[in-house]
Image 1 (cartoon, rainbow, N blue to C red):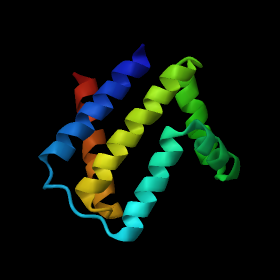
Image 2 (image 1 turned 180 degrees about the vertical axis):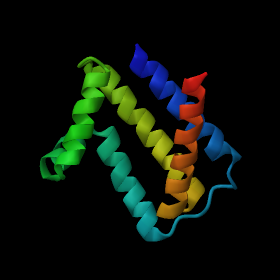
Image 3 (image 1 turned 120 degrees about the vertical axis):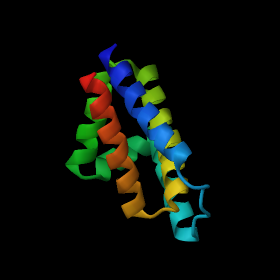
Length: 119
């Protein structure tokens, strides 16, 4: 259950930052395509499996972490990936696909989460 609290806190922090950001920006074709492919990998277990077989070891490590976080429950694992896809889509749209802006938003969300955990 601790994973749910951590996840909710992180998503809440991101959501507040994304909502407070400027209006969503129009993505260029390359960014829109990259977002679409990322969404597919996050939402489709088969696409994700293929990606994990071909990806660097860090991706498989993250997947194992998600599985561990949900206690091996396949349905909950898919919920986490669906939520990640939703948050990532909002993050990309608010940043206009700019990696520096995405990183800034994530760093701010992380700082908010750390402050709230100290309370």
